[in-house]
Image 1 (cartoon, helix red, strand yellow):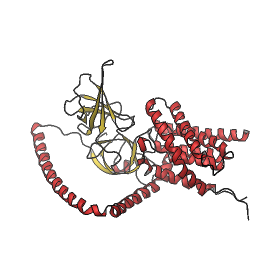
Image 2 (spheres, rainbow over the protein chains, first blue to last red):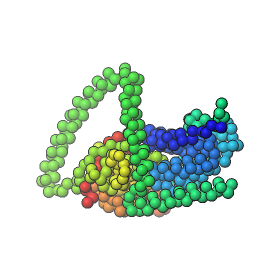
Image 3 (cartoon, chains in turn green, blue):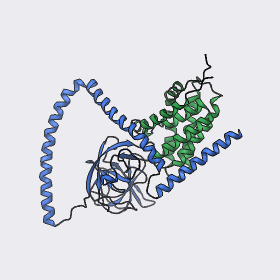
Image 4 (cartoon, rainbow over the protein chains, first blue to last red):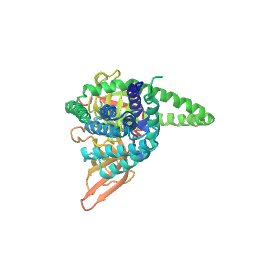
Length: 162
Length: 278
């Protein structure tokens, strides 16, 4: 079997973070910022499994936390759990299953927001949190498709030598 | 399974160590080395995106709005004449104001030195409201220096000592961040309170007297009064306009919601009032 070019996920993470802190920062439908880095963590864990998903999730979480300036622990823990947790499903879903990415993106958004709600309950009002969670879940479930497609294209499945 | 668990625990320990490092650095008012390295790695890309984005935006404007440009140009010329007239009038007012001030022996609001800065990146999430600007300690910016534009107050520098960065960078906490608090005064009635960030698009004017005269449409200015540990805003800068007033008779509490004067999503350059907090 030929190895997958998994190193490509790191330049993609860098690129997503650059866009997340510049152009995408102004893209906030209904006042909710789309978290493309979270969608990248879900995509990587679904495509490459638990271990790579966990490492990618941890690094993405830490870096996002540094960029956010607050709640580094919440970012690191939530992304690590998402990367590791959804990595379990990589063998259960086919790469081409169109429903797996949106379902996992929605579940990951809920999980991340619940972790934030639990770890920093006083930082934001509940009604804001609920509205933010619902809108972000809906948008992430839709916008995972392009992100997942990008990662799936950049990391083709392992092939046998010809 | 056992291997996966131990692998997961190792990652968790690494995360814990980094969180501890960052929180210790934050408590000391610094930025940790990994955080600085992260910003150093992202900064060149952010610069490219901003410059390329600006170029595409200009090209797009020329291509799609070519027909409107002539009429827009005419309108802008007319506006320029109008603005020049306004400018002359304002200069006269300024001169008169200075004369009156010296006559009344009034002291000017404490100044500092204005430093021009450009915004280099925005916040990554909705949980905080910050921007990053391209000045730091070398240019004279310090933590708690006030950042403003011609519209009014933008916020306050939180950190200005990023190490390892290829270009100078300071972190500015916006007026709307939930950790932000500014001593405020209603321009019309003189009622004083504290404008606090809500984490959303508005600020909340709290600690007002229940019988204070506050109405929708009132302009809110900085009061110059010290708030918590960071209240070093000079007197008289515009914060925004009251858009809603809430009176809670049960708790005898008056709260006003303020729409900030600064369009945070549109500004690209700011001024830092440096050297006033020594």
